[in-house]
Image (cartoon, rainbow, N blue to C red; front, top):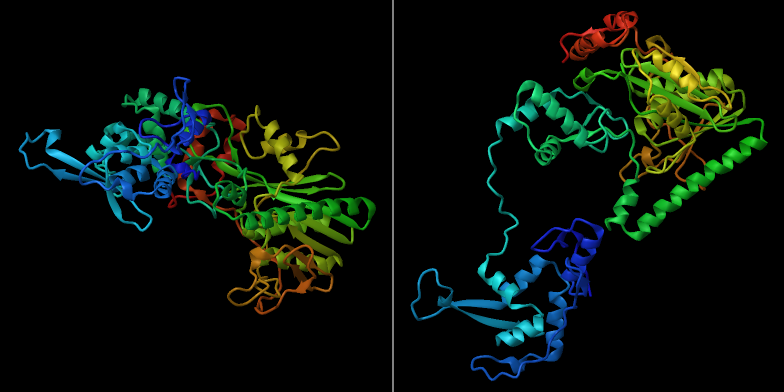
Amino acid sequence: MIIADEDNLRSPRQKPSTPKKVRAHRKRQSGESYIGPDGTVKQARVMKEHCNCKCRGTKCNLISYDERCNLFEEMWSVSWDSKRAIVKGLVDRVAKKRTFAEDSNRKWSYNYHLKTAAGERIRVCYVLFENTLAVGEWFIRSVLEKPLKNPNTKRPQKEPTAAVHYLVNTFFNNLPKMPSHYCRKSTDKTYIERRYQSLKELHTMYKQECEKEEQEIVCLTTFKKTFHMQNLKLHQPKKDKCDICVSYEVGHISKDDYDNHIDLKDRARLEKENDKLQAKEREDLTVLCMDLESVLLAPKIEASALYYKTKLIVHNFTIYNMTSKDCKCYVWHEGEGGLTANEFASCVVDYITNTTTTAVVIIYSDGCVYQNKNTVLACAIRKVCKEKNITVIHKYLVKGHTQMEVDSCHSLIERALKKVLIYVPMDYINVFRNARVNPNPFNVQYVNHTFFKDFSNVGPFTSIRPGRGKGDPTVVDIRCLKYSPDGSVQYKLNFDSEWDEIPEHRVNNGDGIVRQLYKNRLKIPGSKFQHLQDLKEYILDDHHDFYDNLEHDTTKK
């Protein structure tokens, strides 16, 4: 028997709250045997025998056994709302000629029908109607006495109370927000700083604030509903599950597309393992992986005042050598640099120039376009390959399955930060260096705005897209990029294909000179500067000068 959609598994009487209850509701809706709330076994729905009535006006004998079976199967293969619609469509309510009181149920008579294979409605008796559809008198009466739900009908909205106004306009508005570089393209939600583990913990802080301000408190249910209506979300450092895999689990993606996705994922991981084995055997090969750690904040101290103040954002771009297990962290805060392609290109070029000594370098990363798959980074790597006479191959893992060895470094850092107080961004340096002992501590470089270079005029092209027209491959389809010492750039759309030249269909008219990206330190918003000034009360005096000297824009809130 066909099971109805998951969204319609709820019975008209109660909502399932546990997997066991969900299974029971699913079986009840499909007419199968199930265990009721009292622990008794409820028998499966079965079509009963044909009636032997001789009622005048009915034509029960015109309904065959096969037609009755089809009606029974249809009835118990749909949702409860559809069941009500079927019953409603087979019963006619007719007013009696005799006069009754206005509120009397006796003034109506009901004519019951069943449909033939040709779709014709045949009037039958109540017994045959009930026996065929295997529904009870209570269900039929409830359908006939109550109107069907109109999905387009909306309940009138209640005016928000003063407590809700305070919750939205004051409490939620004052919570410190932060960007999420992992999710900025796939969601427009505003993220609350990663200090709260759950909405219940945030609701506890809200109650304390209400008691202090002598405001009325809303319950947890209203708090959660209002939180989601404001398009807010507790910050999550990274997506844990692949979008395609989750969509396949709920039936939104075909098995062929899912199998193709898994094949790409397995092939990418196999490619990485093969390169790691080759690096152990070849002295002229280095295999790297790189990624940006989730956003860090300064200051990071245990004070309730931090709950409502925005902090300085700190970035950590990490490059990990999968052969020697050496790890280098490039650390800067938002007053020294941003998160553009030039910042990441500056880190990669510095690492290749000053750290690698082999003739061939293979880099693994995710396919984040603004970070790892763009023209700025491509031109920067091409330039350093020509200068050092080396070959760099940049390989991209499959979206949703970008777990790399560098993630273990970030895990060690986050574990070391759990019980450490951070007053200024520089405090992160010692924590990073002490986060690992074997095989050696992390190499940490604290950089400022003078470190970052502008590679936008290096050339020779302004696009690394393999195709030109509609339907041709795009940048996101690239699986590998190869930079040769002669300046040529080649690409692969999958690991098993041959190398193809990147077409230089867009000429860069730049002068090829690498300039400083920033002439001065970056300005932070004036509101954030003021919040940091307020937090100086909870920071050691030795660090006050750092926050006093931050460049800030008084016109930017």
